[in-house]
Image (cartoon, rainbow, N blue to C red; front, side, top):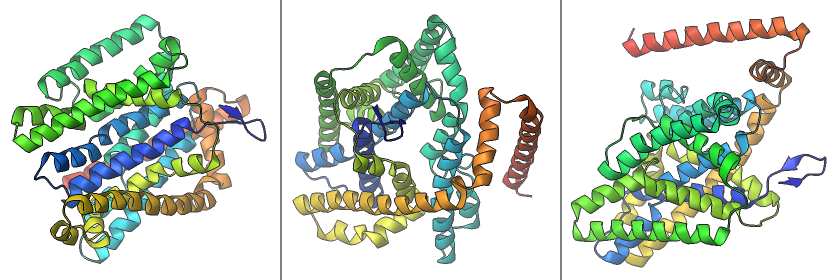
Length: 394
């Protein structure tokens, strides 16, 4: 961290650069898997597409690790939840309404677009909202609980989920991914508090490279020679956040970039701030199929491009999605700030919630804050009741 113009601490750009790479990993997997552009035929083709699609779930883990690294010592800020929720719905709602108008989306898709957590139109964003909301309780466990209690929880989860899934390819005892995100958050907090000083970037990069290469070569060999058992294990290690290979790659690349000496770069940090928006832009349900087929003409190029040309088209498409998504997200961020996030009513409301959550409410505001929390509880109760009634079809 460095000092800004007004004495505020600002992030160095090493981890921000990693966030940009992670969104490129995610786009690569989504485009390759959803557009049908994957081309086999020889070991070289299999290796290329295995490499492009190999790190999307690792990137998801890295995003949680980076967030935990910074949030574990911070107070609760309700504005973070507002920001993430707005980022999601400002993509899901207008895109889904447009698709409904042209006859592709349904009314159910529109309802889901308003409910990023309950309906999970974008699973990672929905779970991330939950994680940010419960972060104060996780921070309390990390900072206040005895070290042995935290180690016991991590050990139980590692054996029942990580080790079990790695060996058997089954989901384990905690099938919902939110448990894995909680595990990553607590493990990162534990490592930051008890284990890690300044890591050695070179060794971390070597570990990441070795695990990634073995995994990618394994997937390519399994696909080229039809080795079902190897393919099953490699796909589990690619797709499941809690497997040991995923954890090794996620933490090794995180500590590799953490150990890099990259000073503050406004350009890198600005581009990195758009990563969640880029994810939302290209992954709204129903939309991404339309985007690949009509925007990038994947169906046409699947028939006309082969070999190196097809690989080049894949890489250019990934880069184009990132550039377009980043431009749109930077504009959306400005709009959200002007219309909602920086408005006085939103700022004051968030301050009230923060005061209650952080336990720093003054005597004159204590009664008002209790009324606000009571009103929020009532609204949430009615909201979930209506949601249940809708789900039952009434």
